[in-house]
Length: 349
Image (cartoon, rainbow, N blue to C red; front, top):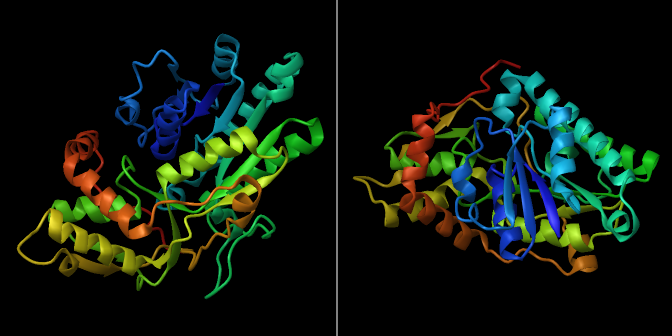
């Protein structure tokens, strides 16, 4: 199968690219190469004859049309998105443009391409939209998000992703366009841009800086290793039922402060400092509109397609810490591009 993957130089997208190539698929990686994209993430497959890269913004309709005409994909996996909540607080219109307008343009170009296909190529084509559990809002002390949970986005980022989900469903219902949607929990693992929680903790600790914890650190997240996620996404692409939504979670809910302390314990072993890294933990002002708890019920995916997450959280965190320690030159390359790991999103609510 030839898969057009948007955002394939990003964190999750590059994991999907690597996994798809390893599984024997052909991949067209379409990426605008914005600040968090990094072609080093796919360096290991760049010379594979089944891999092609297109430096294209999904908001550029003519360029996207050219990519479809040139490469004739069998499927689309749409991961290109602005995704960092702190940045969304400071610049929400960038999220509206990429996540809403960009998705609408991609849908229209893909639909026009699909309408011209014939036979099995048309019957087998599908558009897989990859989204987030944040579209569902926040949970209290218990319960899980499911595919039936009503949408209740609370931030500019989650609202933009909810909008893109609705667009994809609308194209499916209105035009009978073959779509499938997945909503995932928080991803972690190698190659994650160091603005998200886990790589922020690791990289700042390695640099001897303070480790910021928003609020009291009691927020709860369900953590999903990116390699497990990539496996699930490709399974949904090939076997998921058209028109359906699948929630993907890691069955690993922890409070943020607990996760940070686990990371610090691993760092104490792999990169010891004069004192325990946990002593660098500093509580800072919470993010405006910070959702309290997310948790995914992925039983539909297990029941219908036989998938469950395989990476235990502690082992995944150990693996992730080791990767950043061993590949710190990757982080230094990002620093040289101007990223300083200082927080954004301090706009007052």
